[in-house]
Image (cartoon, rainbow, N blue to C red; front, side):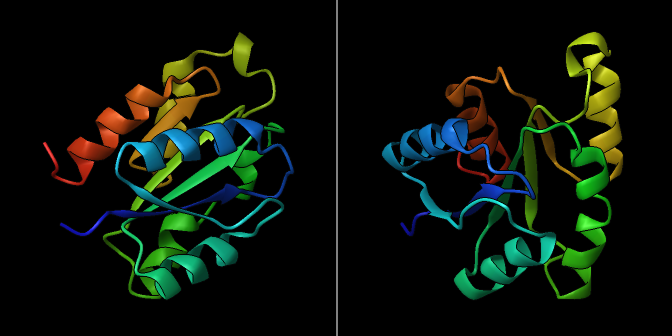
Length: 138
């Protein structure tokens, strides 16, 4: 069976250590991660997903401005024929995240079209479980 492909990277900012660790665990769990780097734009993720025929785009953002930086991601995917791509986002997504109600933050990103939204404290096994479910591997 062909491995499911995940394009991963950091949207706009440079904090990538957590994502690099997650990529190692995902690869060891049977996924093919295609890490495209940090300081990326939405278009970088979309282009990489098209070029690699990815199943998932997994975005990390840790500097607190993802609510602004990720606006319109789902729409841009649809415009280029990636309407069914699975979108995940995680990290320190908004400034003051620790002081806000997580369910409100999660709902904000789900309304933006993200399938899954994770706090920076997410454990890799939770992401793997969700990927397997969302990709129909269970």
